[in-house]
Amino acid sequence: MSDASSGGADRCRLYLITPPRIDDVAGFAVTLDAAFAAGDVACLQIRLKTEAGATDEDALRAAAKALIPLARAKDVAVLINDSARVAREVRADGVHLGQEDGDPAAARALLGSDAILGVTCHASKDLAFEAAEAGADYVAFGAFFPTLTKEPIARAEPELLAWWSHATTLPSVAIGGINAENCAPLVSAGADFLAVSSAVWSHPKGPAAAVAELNAAIENAAQVSHARD
Image 1 (cartoon, rainbow, N blue to C red):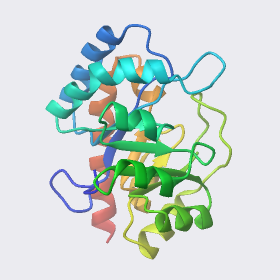
Image 2 (image 1 turned 135 degrees about the vertical axis):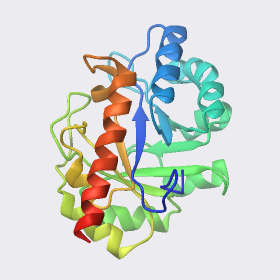
Image 3 (image 1 turned 180 degrees about the horizontal axis):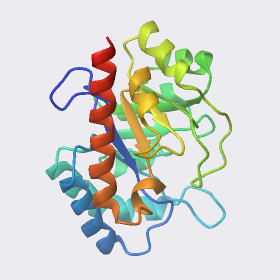
Image 4 (image 1 turned 30 degrees about the vertical axis):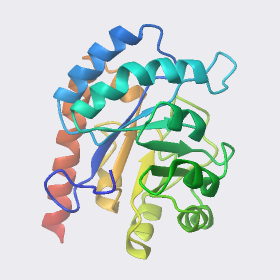
């Protein structure tokens, strides 16, 4: 996932986040496999919550057992949300941490140098630099648009992605309410990855159609941006 390319060094790529609850893991695996087949996906973050909104570690373990082999067969990195401990237990490719979900430096020490470590930085340049210093492999900025997945702490603007891409080589992930219709400014601004959840799983034509549409939108935005350059 450290390479933002599936064929070009600067191609923005898709970063899928699971729905917050998966009641039928086997059924979801079939849906996920179809989504992977529909277009380029760099990463899958397994993010599962209890009804109270806490991280559901038992659900993470159960989902990881079924989904990690499926993802690896398609060369898709798998990250566990919030818990470096669970990421280590299930031998995921890494972990994504929110600002309240553990110390990035401790996660790096636990998982080792080869693991992928991502950190939520909201709309803060300071938090992004702190994450980089702690050993993060990417920083996540957002929310860029209104989202139904979670209540956003901060609202970010595309200019932040442009500034970050010029200030550092550390990859950025854009998150929050992103879909095929609104992603172009984020791609043009320099996002390395687009994190998407509800726009895929709740797409009226199904997740596979959503992945295909998002990849087409990313490609179109990249072509327009390159033409301007």
